[in-house]
Every structure is written in structure tokens, then in C-alpha cells.
Length: 97
Image 1 (cartoon, helix red, strand yellow):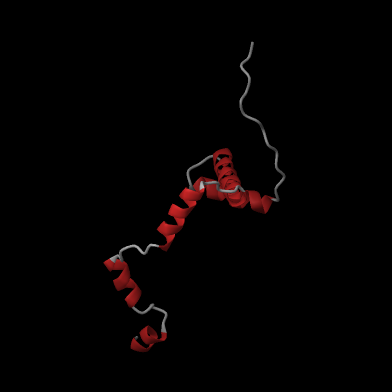
Image 2 (image 1 turned 30 degrees about the vertical axis):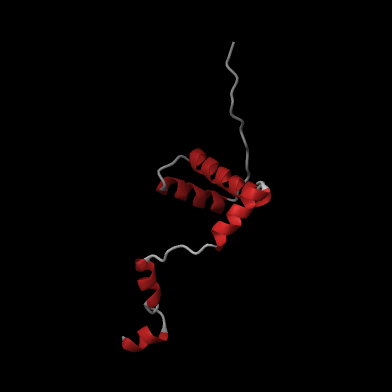
């Protein structure tokens, strides 16, 4: 008796241009077309579920969550320095070049 396959096949009709893009991306990632598409599909499905599923927590847990959001963290000196520098595309930087 043969073991049951735990995998299912999905058939998708794609324009040749879409298939060429997907195949090229899979090749660049070093993956088979199947592995690339499966990974992309699962990621998109997980993102969709995260957007739709409600997050449930107790009233105490929510209160602790709000306190954490409202409590400022210590500044990171490297980030402070970086944010004080003018952006390379700002008018100040363009005038200096």
C-alpha cells in the first residue's frame, strides 16, 4: 500500500511575462521555481492573516502593553548623531557641493 501524499498540487495560469519574472527571481535566489513560489505564497498568506486576525490579551496585559508603548526608551547616541546630520539630498548639502 502506498503512503498518502501530504502535499497538494495547485495549478496557476500565468502570463509568460509573469512566469519569466518569477523564474528569474527564483534562479537569482538559488531556489527551484516550486520552492520560490511556495515561500512567497506562504509569506503573503501569513501577512494577510496577521492583518485580519485579532490579537487577544487580558486587560492587565493590554495595560502593560500601553505602558510599554508610552514609556520612552533611552536614546541611542549613534542614531541621535545620524538624525542631526542633514540629508544628502537637502538644500544645505546641495549648496556645499
